Amino acid sequence: MRRQFVLRFILVACICLAGALADATQSQAQGRRVPPGRKAPAPAATPTPPKPLPEPSPEASAEPPIELDAQDVDTLRITTDLVTVPVIATTREGNYIPDLRQEEFSVSENGVKQEVAFFATVSAPFHVVLMLDTSGSTREKIGLIREAAIAFVDQLQKGDRVKVISFDDEVRDLNEFTSDRSLLRNSINKTMPGKGTKLYDAFEVALSSFKKIKGRKAIVLFSDGVDYFSDRASFDGTLRWLDEEAVIVYPIRYETREATARLMREQMEEQQGPVLPTIGVIHAPAPGTTAPTFPSDDPDTVPTSGQRGSKTGPFGLPPASEILRRRRESERERDRDRDRDSGRYPERFPSPDRGPGPGSTDPNPRRSSRRSEDEELNRELDRIFLTADSYLTELASKSGGHLLRADTLGSLPAAFAKIAAELRTQYAIGYYPIDKKRDGTYRKIKVTSTRKNISVRARPGYRAPSGG
Image (cartoon, rainbow, N blue to C red; front, side, top):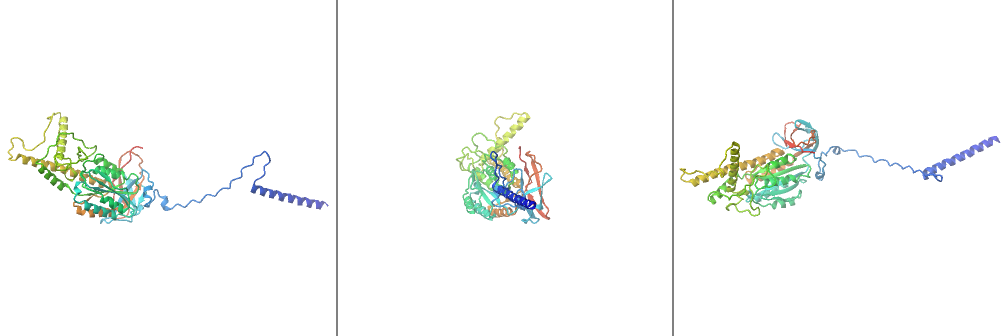
């Protein structure tokens, strides 16, 4: 009996334990019952397994990317501290080298080696501003200029984007950056010859168009380099701005010096000698401007060069009388400053040297006077065109570009073709300077390559940001 009782007790206990386990399992699945007056605990949230992170690619690990894509150029993240350097690599014989790798370049700033953080290959797209001087000197050759410019655009790579700017006494921004060749041809064909030459103003517009552009950038400038009537920008101001931009500049200079002198002499002959302009206010050049500027009394009405007292002469320059007046006024100012510094008091109204004075034995004083005027004009034209040549040379050297000369417009297509070929084989290297000071100083850059027997050309330096 006792044994049966023990067996029954064990059986009942097993049944009760099985029921308890079943209730526990049901409570976990449906929630436990809570006695009245007690708050049920919140069910535990089932954790969601995290999504696996993609493995970083070699392109994504660089900052910014090594390869530039045509669609990514405008949105590429480059901080303002990144210094970008356009680079051209050639063999000793002058052949371009298109297959250099990032690790084959080395860059230093003020003699301190920098780490290359950005590298654009020759396949990366370009943004190019094509600047066409359409002053009076192009009047008879505008058709050839258009043809050469269109041929240049057609030689660029498919993804390259171009903006066309023409300038004379006005600056005309003819289109936004585009790779549409048909639109570019239409813009170029709209160019028409004008009169004055606002070269500095036009170059400032070209530089400002790159503000939001990242990647490879270039300006191709066709001009004789002479500036007249710019009223916003200056010689020195545009060059200083160029120091702060990673824009490579290719000036194509055409010769107008001899033709200008010849036409001005003819103008003087037609006027029966130099015309003395009425006394007026002499406007000082804009601050920093090296080349002289000649204001127009009425910018909306420009008389022909043969009219008496006109402000525009051949090729958009002022007439000979205006140039001579400006030269004499500058000489008088210089003489007055020198006399003031020495304590002398010159005559109140000094007169210019007009040739032989009273008692001269010259049988034809008027001819001698004209000869003197002619020599004086030639000296001033020499100064003007030396300034023009200096400006174009500085644009090329400061940016790492190359100055080409098209002394005749017939050689213009070849000059454009050479620039297009170089743009197709240009690299861009970027680095974050070790020297973080924003002190506005000019810093020298040197780019070299580990590949043997090659020549590397790059911008010689840049100007650090100021403040901040």
